[in-house]
Length: 376
Image (tube, rainbow, N blue to C red; front, side, top):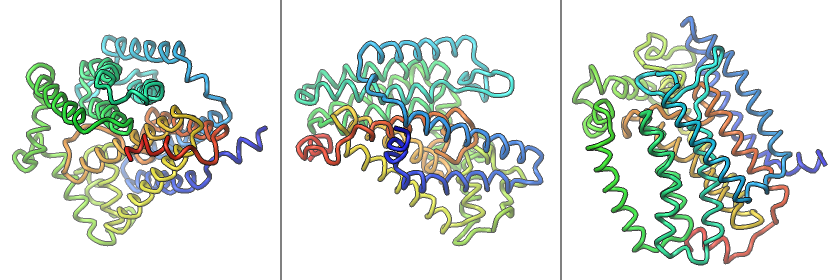
């Protein structure tokens, strides 16, 4: 039984993930002699080991029970309640109530909520794929995203709100929506954004968007982070400054180089070549996830695999774009590289569930099923 489950694990996927994790750990270690560098490194090693344990444990569990409506309703309502309690009792960090602090470690519930949203949307669209072109399903599915979106904006966590919207919008696209309905969704998104601008966004969030349009307008205040990040990335040039010679991170010009701006810290030391290799590895990870999705036993497994790929792509695009000055600074972690346990555990939970689905997947699914969800 155990041997059969281990054979179902995509070891090629693991092979692509390990160098990314090592790149993050090496980058954190290179911050020495910063006094907190060793602490970041040692804690992250522990989180990596725990996350891999979760990955293998989840791969042994039969997750077909996630298809049951009562289970999904419970998970969705429970995590919604957790996010509501977070607004009331959570710890404030950088003006955002997004963490529960338990002394030695902290926990960010929104990461788990993103995973649950992927599962809920996969279940919803898998049962309605025949009538998916009915526009009502766009708005019903939008309600499932709206609940966590509002709770996250009340924290206020603008970055996670972006990821939630990205997950919903992308999963609507892969479900087979018509072009007419796509236009209506985009129009609805613009109306939502305008409403959020006038009634929900905090001044600092508006400042980040202003800074996105013109990052050099206020480099001493709202544009400082992205300005220092672009300096770090650019100074790496083609081959980088070398391990431990990243001045922007070592001299503390680059903010939170272990988390939000770990890509900039890495790029400064490893240059264009190293950055290209990391992005290539991310591309290979997405490829393996989509390949596993293509082997899904039913529409639910196919959509879940696509949703996990979307989950990772959203975080990669936003974080790397932020580090390059192409996206607003939102505090979104870079998968497998950024410091922190909440996002790392969630990433490996999602991949563990995906590996579990490989156990009862089929060697190849029906062509019409795959083509429908790929929009062919």
